[in-house]
Image (cartoon, rainbow, N blue to C red; front, side, top):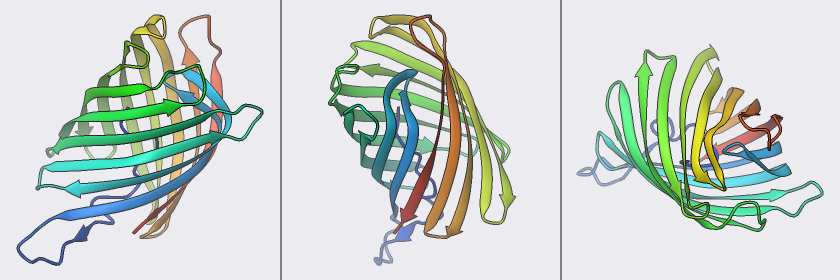
Length: 230
């Protein structure tokens, strides 16, 4: 669940420190805009040609605890009239080789495919060296009145001083999630991020969702994210 767009380079790269010398509060604010040829959410196709924007922020409450929050909006540019508005809030604990957290989001949809509701659930990530992350997450969606869970692995590697390549892949499952239970989909995304300067980054990407049931089609999509922090 978490946010719908990644926070590409908030804490610590673009963190600010308060002027109060007695406080070590760090924060970062980021605006992301993007386009996707298809919008796939948890294995379900919701829109063709989606334009999206997200405002997100992270605050370091201590050396170990991070609070993140923000809002996201997406609108369909194709033949449909899909719109989605979301707000999210998350709290996570960071250690040297792992992190865990709890996320809460509210989603409002103009389409009847998904119903308005809350998403809430925990997640856990392990980090292996500088290149690998393995994670798992589970969430309850009140709009679906069901559960969604996933396991995923992500590999990333610098391709220069100002860029890096990332490959994400995983499997998901559901329980009573819009009448779906069992294996849900296999998913993957390949992205390349170029940091134009310390405040601006571009990320083109391609991805896929491979359905595990006969009611949905396999999907391939691409897009571009543009991020600015201040």
